[in-house]
Length: 358
Ligand SMILES: Nc1ncnc2c1ncn2[C@@H]1O[C@H](COP(=O)(O)OP(=O)(O)OP(=O)(O)O)[C@@H](O)[C@H]1O
Ligand SMILES: [Mg+2]
Image 1 (tube, rainbow, N blue to C red):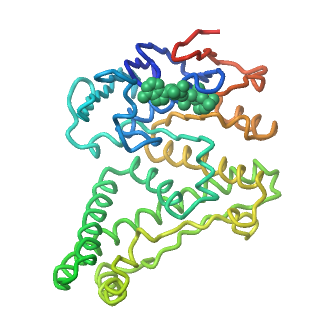
Image 2 (cartoon, helix red, strand yellow; image 1 turned 60 degrees about the vertical axis):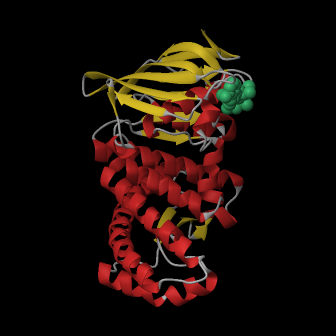
């Protein structure tokens, strides 16, 4: 799969900009606040139907405009395809695949696999457990529509349960019925997360070995209360903890509490790793993410690298440049001096919401 072009109409600081991609490295160079990340964000919106920078679609709309439209043309299994995202200032959103409206985002999320790597991604290693869950869940959703649907179902039940726990008079039977559905979802989610983390770990070990000249070993461990439990056992566990939920007025057990521990040479990297080790671990995980999607989907994902070159040393940059050769990537940077002897690259200059090919 590869992207052919994108057209941004009233998206962030773009009025009307057509951008053609090559099936290689697409490098966008420019000073701060010119619109480089906005290009990456627009591609992300086409893949996930929403941004990773905001939950408010309306913020994507260029100031004082009534609507935005993104059109992304891509080639998949020798077919030319198009995704169109339309959002207006009344918060109406329409996503179309080849001109046909998509009613549920779950029907779309497997379509355009991407791996995004930005300075914020360091939260996966250093941040709260939620960031790591989101990292794994993004891979799971891109691999399986049914995972996304199960996750949505679970979150819906969790919200209903938490609402009930906040009431003065709690209907326990209602919560016990919710636990039925939730245990069914938990069983499926834990099984899928476990499988994905196992696959990710195999890839990560190989990559990390190469990245560190075999000096370091990475490990990724899935932490959950529900490992190898079946639906009945999960239900029993949730029911048994209900009295604490009631005391605390919120759900203390569930897959919303899972975590993923990341170790380098048996030490938790987020806690004990140096800055360089944290970044290397992240690079490993992102490339492992790319490998898993590539293998499982039999489709090459698009690599979106937002302003990360300045964060990496020359060894890591060279490793990355060697790695991405032969794949399609979209890279942004303020300083293109790392580009030497790189083939199959298109460099464009971004200046205040307009583009110039260099
Ligand atoms: N809704 C919007 N309408 C118009 N302009 C916007 C909107 N949202 C953001 N911008 C503008 O877009 C610019 C930021 O774009 P972007 O984040 O892509 O910058 P960048 O080139 O990646 O910069 P940096 O190198 O600092 O990361 C800012 O000037 C900001 O004011
Ligand atoms: Mg940026």
